Length: 393
Image (cartoon, rainbow, N blue to C red; front, side, top):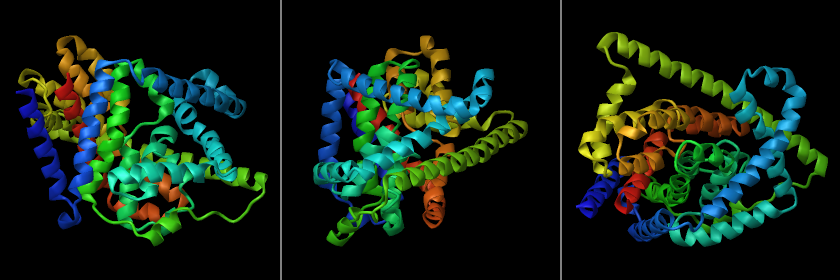
């Protein structure tokens, strides 16, 4: 029965992706099948053994140290605010982007980043049927974060057509930053964080191959690895510091607008219909919760948590999940937990649009144009990851 439900989930998820596909005739089924098998294999290993747990915790610990170094500079400039406990999101989440940007710049300057792009592109593009830059971007998103990752590909942005930019943005929204894995692990079981991290990587490729199928030519591959004109070390530092600060400020502005708008919609909806827009979406998500393997008696509660993540962010949803965990089965908790581990929410449209706009205004406007379709695709990635998890629990 569980396997039948899994097949039903695949049909529903793939059908939803197929409906909005840019080019249904060019969908490549072979890489999709290979990546589904890889997802099942990794899900089995991660959910039934301790393999990979130490590695992921090590990566998370590394980024915690990097953020601690970033805090030294932040405290020097904003020490009074930090000590009084105000503006924690701005200081703890946005400002470290500046330091991460510096590290990306250094990696680019010493030629490490281009080597990583070539290596990861060569390996992953053989599996996913996409270009080298798309393959690199998916992994880099899970390391740098959904806004910082675009700094690492800033040299390629002007040359990217809309269809390739969509795939890059889908990867960014479907993953999570390694720097906040530790925070997730304090709210949900670490094994679900790790499972989602791995499965979302392939899930982003799968959904992109259905919604946005295309071929990358040799000429486009050459553009991907073009080198920037030579700069001195300190010229590079200045450029990437300013780039990081620009991204942080624009992302902050976008978040203010999106979060405020969602709050207004919730209140207006509640005043008219007597139920919040968030709760209403919970009923909309209930059938999807059932399809991915959640027991029928728990689908409304699960759907509400899923809607919470969509409308606000994964942190709020994880907190809400923690409040009702005792009333849910362990299977439901596991499935919903992996669904929550991604940046697929409305505010992320603003974050990604702002990040790209800060580096290239024209491309940022392109991202804004397909923002809702981007969120739709990233949400399907989360549903696919949840369905894969459901068949293993």
